[in-house]
Length: 48
Image (cartoon, rainbow, N blue to C red; front, side, top):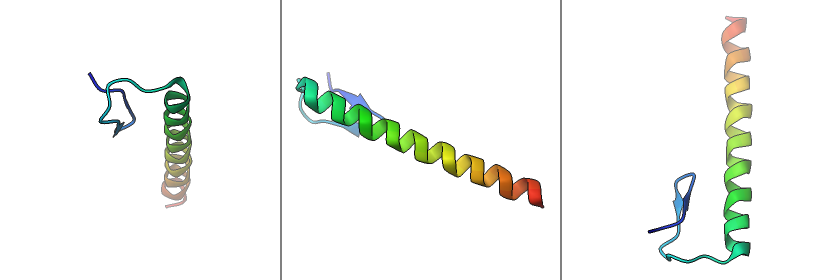
């Protein structure tokens, strides 16, 4: 079993707590950026 988070998978089966935390932080940042992009797209579409 691999520990995957947001499409970023580790080839190792057992990650350290610190590695898991870092992966989750990166995943959270990616989600925040995606939400920002969606908000911008909605704003652009509402203008037209």
